[in-house]
Length: 527
Image (cartoon, rainbow, N blue to C red; front, side, top):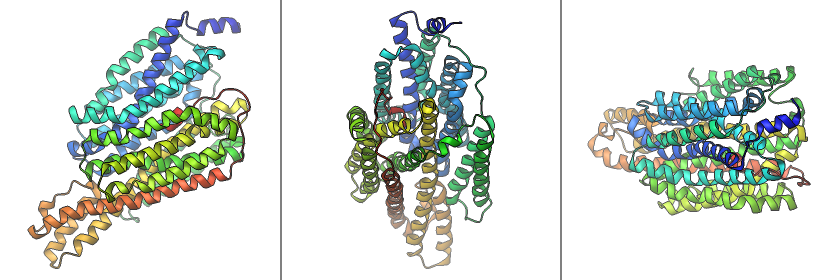
């Protein structure tokens, strides 16, 4: 088959069909981007309705991210080997069916398992979107198509919290998942009709052992870290997980050095600029994810806001990122990507630290202010980060480098939810213990308080204060919120240090500029 024949086979026969194919990629990607923000708004209601622990909430968030990280690193190769259309259809179908399983969940473990399947579907679906666009549109039209896709992705991410809050308040948390069914069916029908079959490359290698070692190492680390708030450090549920995780990750890097086509080639590890950019990525997204995971939870559980009210206060985040993507990209073209990345990291550090004002001032407007500052700061760094990653490698490595960078951003999210979630639960337990014990003198009451504190480590706010002596119930109810607020402020201050570490990484970067050729906007990296 000649190149001309191949291109004719890959291109849709008409403008309408090409537009429908673009719509399919937008709808499918939007499902994945909306889901990542909707679930955070629904977590307090999930905890209450399923009577699940705070650690289970961390797994509900992290099981999705873990699966996403596991397959994201080889999803591009899978698309090349079996065709992006086939992977896209499997991903959409899997994500949609898993969403139905999430909505029907009647227990925490069920929901965690369904979220894991949902992450697998997302990992197969999301990376194929841009691949399909690149195959459908000629170079002179591709920039416009990618721009439409990017703006739609940003808009869906911005609308996600508001949609989630409305669905949770008016239908229940399950509707945050049911909403994916009509979208998934529509995307599936459009893909089957409009996206043509592409060439398959059976010679593309797949590094399954490397992928398994990477996800197993991350999974062991996350398991041990989440258990820190439930068990002492010397418990078998904690320290062995860290050791096993470290050994598996060492095994991953050793394996990658031995094979011909690794997930993470040695030439990229030897690229100082690329390593610094990914160190920036993992630390900045760790700080970023701490706000996305904890701020909505605190606004609902501590301030008593509804899901819709909390969602409205998060709206500035997505809006600011969307509005700033294009002008900041032009600035990065002129000045280099280093300067806006530094400003963005410092801004995220301030936004994360100032999020403590939410509980200090007891007003949701403080949350809106922090989210606005976070959105402006994220808008400063998202597109320059993507530009920097693409500029730091040779052209033939650009797809590989972009895929690694997307996976690193998800790993940052994964680590953040594990570390800062566990830290919040642990510090909350310690604050609660100190406050309650100070008001008790008799041994009988002390025993009851110990039971309450043990329960606090598991459920955070869902504590049976009726088990306490009558004279302690009223002060204890205030102590629960005060302890949670103090723990939140401390954890967010630590999370801000991760953003400052990212700023230090950016300071060490060179001042490279984009010299030629349009670069894809960084919307996907922000999700």
